[in-house]
Image 1 (tube, helix red, strand yellow):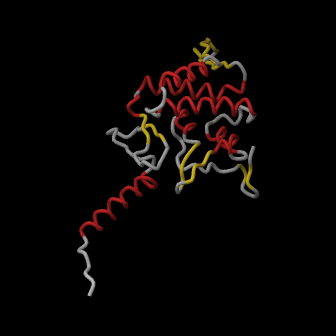
Image 2: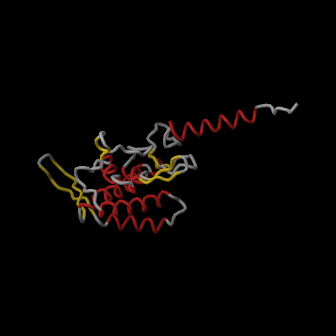
Image 3: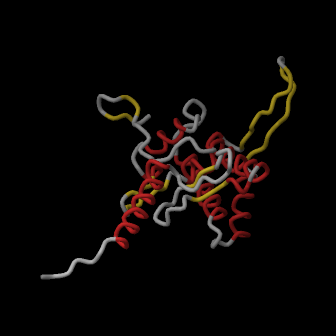
Length: 195
C-alpha cells in the first residue's frame, strides 16, 4: 500500500470519485489546468484506486491487475467516446468479460452470486466491465461526460430531473458560470474612449 510520510495511506488525488465502478475507472485520467494526469501511472496509484474502489482486501496491486484494468479502461472509455470505433471497443470489452463469470449458489442464508475470474488479477477489471453492462441495462442515458469541453471526466446522473451537466458544480460548473458571467459583463460594458 502506498503511503505518504506521516499521513498513512496516500490520498486519492482525483477531482471526481465515487462514481459507479466503470466510470470511476475511466476517471483515473483527468485534466487539471491543461495538464493530463493518470492515477494508474503514478507510483502507488494502483493501490490508491483499488482501495477507493473497495478491492484493497481482495486484489493484489500487481502487473496483471494493472494490465487488466488498463485494458478495461481503454475499452469503456472508447465506448463512452462516440467518435471511437464502437465495434472494436465492444469486442475488447467482450474479451475482458470472457475472463470471469457470476456463479449462482445456495448458501446458508439463501441465494448467493459469486464472481469467479480466471485469476485474481482480473477481479477488479472484470467487475468494472460487468458493472458497465448493468449501467447500460438500467439507464444508459444517465451516463454522461462533463459538459466542460476541457474536462474528460464522466459521471452517472442520479439527479431527480436528470439534467446534471458538470462533473462537479464546485469545479467545472463554477468555471462555466464564471466564464458566462465574465462574457456577459464584458459585452455590456460601454467602450471607453481615449482622451
